[in-house]
Image (cartoon, rainbow, N blue to C red):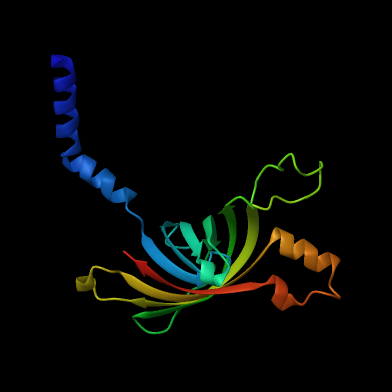
Length: 193
């Protein structure tokens, strides 16, 4: 029992040390976002990290579609975007004309599955209804906020994406599918910390 108490005391002291606090601070996300539509549900919230002088952005997001909008549906997605160009339009405004990215999304529910249920014959679906891979682009305006606000930046963005199923369906059926039927749009707000 004494060994357990001694170990707990050591762990507690380590958790209160400055080095632990610095480590914990690094785990906090660099941004949080909220998005309407765009293959992330009717509404989605998420957080993520920025790397390489903020040219690479990763995030995880939870999305929800309410019953009144065709749900209920719960989604979980992860994305990575590369920002090749930034245009500074003054000291506080930055324009990101075209970020390029990839996303993966998983939809939860009885109608969505990753492994084909036994009720279907083999190869009935060539795709996984629960999982989609997306190609995406984003355009954004980023406002740099004063340091006293505690929020580094406020970004508004417009995202366009398509997924593997839509893209293959479009290529195989160009005469019957319009580009607007396979490209989805979403808008969002991102707060940088």
